[in-house]
Length: 630
Figure 1 (tube, rainbow, N blue to C red):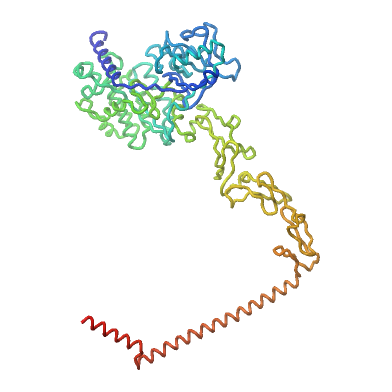
Figure 2: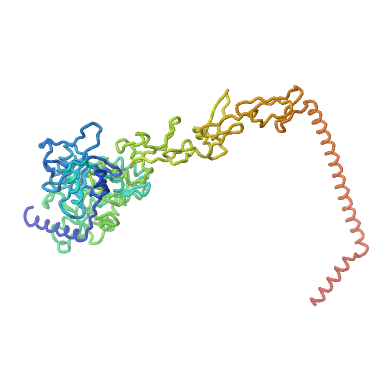
């Protein structure tokens, strides 16, 4: 493979790389770095997210910055210089290490910083240029999967200022902020995974399959519950026209050089060819397409996982027949999948793969997809290790705040800020009701809904139950007191809000309601001979004579006997006069109706024997009208 064939392959790859470089558009994904001290450097700056490690998507990280006196490029172990970045005290603010660019891979700098106890590494660019993305190397990947701290590249200008301040002995404090690194517009996250079915491309392919294996269950839960919309993609290249008839293009491409993939073993003389990879990629796309049409797009994860286990290249099972067996085992229609795949030998466009090539081109704020694997979340390329927890954090940061699923609020993913001083939000300790709502990005202070009752207020210092049923919860925030088995409340369910002391009390209704002494204030029970006694919330008034009855409405005393007799005779007289008036009225109506009936009968009899005046006039009018018609 080191002869002409190898040189032809290198030439082909170079031609494709140049074509991609000419038309490609790479987007540097960024987060912010906020210097909080010293005062002369305070402000917010941009930095570029490294394409390795674990960026804290949706979160922040506050720490002290140290610029080491030795090993300033971080290319050697800091242990050799007896340097440690671990906090001096347990629970102390973490330390970030500031290192210079150059001499070794970015990943090596991050690995050495992590081993020395640093919580993050800030790499200072050595050129006055726009920010670039620190990528992982093609070689020396032994540390790549083990880097768990975030890494960022800062500009030379900011780096020089930080280094100067550090050398002057200033305390450098910065806040790394990834909260806005990914868009979070609504309650659903759209993400794409650009991958490959090749399982013989070394550590990169192993990393892809480990991710599919570990993330499969999480991805399927999110998809089934409608929280995410996932789409798999596959990168293909085309063979330049000048090489279409070459042995290399014929072995690495399908559809007459239109869709190509590198040789899995980078050896044309043995094993599988690139065209086998392209064909299997096409199968996987079609499996997703058919599964999606049946309402089960999550079956793609099962297919890719099962195919990798059942049909590996090393066992010579990377075949169409093995793929068909896996498809059938998942209950998918194999005929629909085969129809979607089409004829790989046809000299024509394949609609599915053509769409994949078009999708590789960046749009909006997303750059071109040129490397594998690539994860795109809400149209932004994910940076960092392809790790289950790291990717889940990134996806969770794509939800609009308070709409994220429960899995995003687990202890493994984020810290519940409501557990620390209730997040600074309103809290009713007596009823364990709080306005603090934990979110992936932090917390929000939002008056809650408890047992169907909505609380209203600013969420920070005040929340008050509102609407029907509000008095059932914390008595609507109103005053309430019980005495001698009697409970009085300033809350009324008839009012949607507010507190008002009931009759017999005065006060603000919230903190207190005081009993009104009606006797002392002489507002009631002022009748002659009346005796007043104040009670809680009311009063008792009695007459001096036991034969007298107190009338509260009129504040007077009347004789019990006289009242009874008067009321009895009055009631009888009302009934009597009512019956008399009813009888007279009925007789009058009867006489009127009888007279009307007699009049109509007499007129009808007389009309049979002599014409009436109004009938004669009517007949004359009839004749005139008839004459006019003639």
